[in-house]
Amino acid sequence: MGSRTGSHQLSNGLIVSGRPEHLKERQPTMGSRAVPYTGGDIKKSGELGKMYGVGDYPGPPPILKPSSRGSSASQHNSGSVRSGPNSGPVGHKLTNSGSMPKKSSGSFSGQLMTPIQPTGLITSGPLSSNTGRRSGQLEPAASFKKVVYGSSVTSLNDQINLGFKVSKVAMWVFLVVVLMGLVVGAFLMVAVKKAVILVAVAGVLAPLVVILLWNFAYKERGLLGYLKRYPDTELRGAIDGQFVKVTGVVTCGSIPLETSFQRTARCVYASTELDEYKSWDGKSANPSHRCFSWGRRHSEKHVADFYISDFQSGLRAMVKAGYGAKVVPFVKPTTVIDVTKSNKELSPNFLRWLADRSLSSDDRIMRLKEGCIKEGSTVSVMGLVRRHENVLMIVPPVEPISIGCQWTRCLLPTYIEGLILTCDDSQNADVIPV
Image: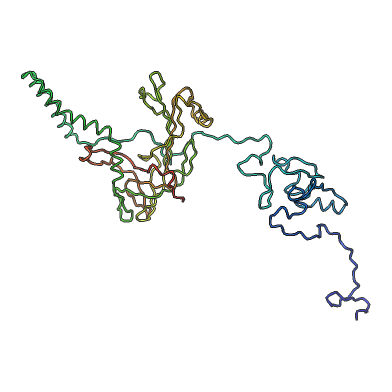
């Protein structure tokens, strides 16, 4: 049946009509030799290992040259080990990477400038190095220009609205008693002509003066102690308009902040302060700067809306600290740069920071401080609760808050105005990743 004219039998046994076609053998375009699996080990890569000088191969690396038309065609379309015009990672197209010396297209000898990675991948070096840069390209200089935020971010000043809240009647009664005591003491001293009366009057007025001086000196520390002792409130049971203290982990809102010098990112509050010391013939940092004291020359304090997750109830509330709200942050800054008489060498970054703010860098004793509340820090917020369409918010109080009279500490009633933010001094290390 196979001898019938006009038909032939295929290799699978099927008989078809027509004469068999005699096809010419096509030359393979790729090497037919099987490539062994190396597993990323360059020592098992054969000619690739010889080309990079890895392994126990005596003598210089071989030079690859085209030997025929078929082999040259395969070299033009080859992958990573041949150096034709359409070559891959090690071809002459990447000679401007800075880490690979320029070689001719017909040969590739010598060792690469960058080492082979353990994975077998050929890279241009670590990301932090300059090996992947083109020649003549420099590192970008750090920018310390002052960031201008919009109206959604509150810019704070250095003044804190903190004072004594005593009724006017009590103040007038105290002044009348003091005045009457001075008049009576002076009259008795003139009539009796004895200094004992003057000593008695001074003994009565001295404790009052000491109490006043104590309150002026211990005013802020007494307020901070009261705020720390104030009990936390559970947000689940808080009603609208209630004054609460909430402690929890904070997260950034729609606008995260960063410090201007160290560029600490993802902050809900950021401050940078530049102080200067004035000697007898020194320059004043501000109009109210006195001699032999530190004065504030420049300040950048910003706060924006953020979220806080209550530790007790687990609820999340929005803290409305942006859009010009009254905020009182009690965050202790840390000294970043301290320029003294013995150490007056300024770093290039600090000089650039001063130049971007048009501040002189002459012979001054300066101190740069930065403080921030980073995302994930534990913060205590004191304000009023507001509920609006299932949205829980903490807003600044409308009226100043008084801590009352603390008789055991001899402190008069102190008031403070605005939303209160307190953060521990050890928050830089204890930050919860969010």
